[in-house]
Image (cartoon, rainbow, N blue to C red; front, side, top):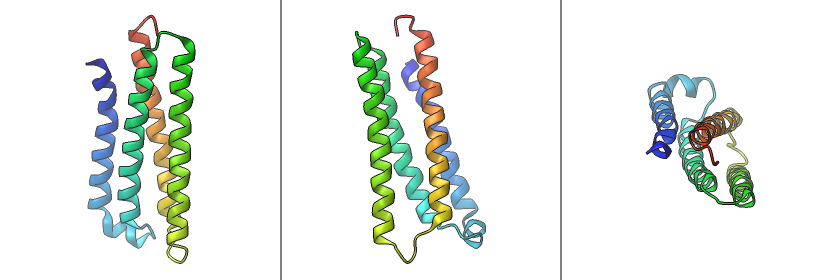
Length: 131
């Protein structure tokens, strides 16, 4: 139950951001943002963060320190390399129409999602004295 509760800020942020991107679509497009890239980037970051958070929560239940560290490092590496590969793929497919403002916004969202994920993990670890 507590594990699900730690994921609720991620879900709320995802829904809120999508609503803002859709409501302010014309404003963002006038400022040079590709809203479709923002929406897809937000979805991809959310899915990767959910996967990573579940991996970290399983790591909290590990009986050894090595098991926990494996989940932390694995989660970090998967997130970093998957996001880098997706950005590189987007760059290769859209060399002429590469939208830097949207990509930099997604990079900021990566940091926000990571911060919320780690904050939830820290709350869970405080509830479990053995973690």
